[in-house]
Length: 201
Image (tube, rainbow, N blue to C red):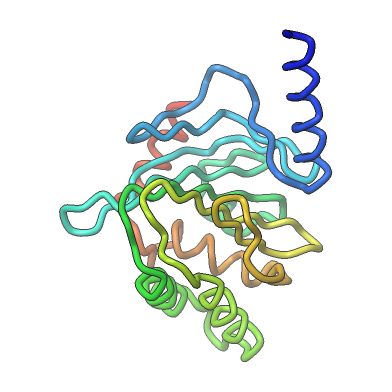
C-alpha cells in the first residue's frame, strides 16, 4: 500500500513539473499567515525560488487576503524585488469573497498609480488584458498565483487554472511588483509585513 501511495505521489510530482507548476519544498522553515502556509522554497520552471516574506492585505477593518512573495535571490531590498529579471512568484490566498469586478477595478487603480512615466500604449493594453482575466468571483480560499518567467512573461493562475495567455515582457512584471513594493504600493501594511518577515528569515 505504501509503495502504491509513493508511486502515485511521484507521478503527480512529475506531471506538475511537466506543466511548469510549482513544487513546494518539504523544508520546515515556512511561514504561516492567518492559517495559510507558505513554504520556504518552491520550484518553478526548474528554478528554486526562496520565500522573501508573507503578510496580510487589509482594507479598512477587513482582512482580504494573505500573500507570499518568492524570488530566486530572496532579496529584502524593494528595488531588487521589483527590478531583478529572474523567475518570481506571488501567491495570494483569499480570506473573504471579492467579486471579479472589484478585483479588476482594484488592480486597475494599483496599476495606474504604478505606471512608469511615458508608459507605452502596449503596456497599458497589457494591463487591461490582465484585468480582463478576472472573470469570476474570487471566493474565500481561492488561490491566485502570479508567475513571471524571463522570456515567457507573466502568467495568472486561479485555483491552479491558467487564465488567458502570459503577458510578455519584464516591463509588465515590474508594474505588478511595483504595485506591492514601490513607494506607491497599494498595500502599505502588506509590504511592511513581508519585508519584516524577510529580515527575520
